[in-house]
Image (cartoon, rainbow, N blue to C red; front, side, top):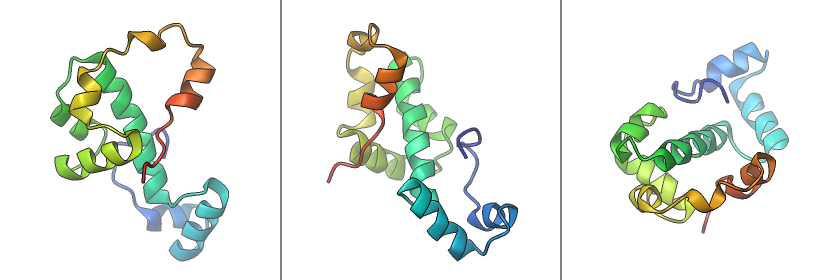
Length: 116
């Protein structure tokens, strides 16, 4: 899922590969990763979207489709939920302050977390 984040999620196919029923696979996945397969995939997509938006050469719509989301509205809502600001606000912001942060730490502090 990490490598193929832009492809549609097929829990049944993943479960078949793991030799499990879809329900058992989803429960096992949640126990292992702390979130459902769909939530995990969306987190990966938002992580990639953040990187693309920081570059600034793609529009929010282009980023949405490039990371595998089919709906700009759903993408924007999920991005805002996980990041705490809209994709267009995130894209417009200056991101140079993170340049000196070591990559291992940057990944830890920039991982999207659901804001409720």
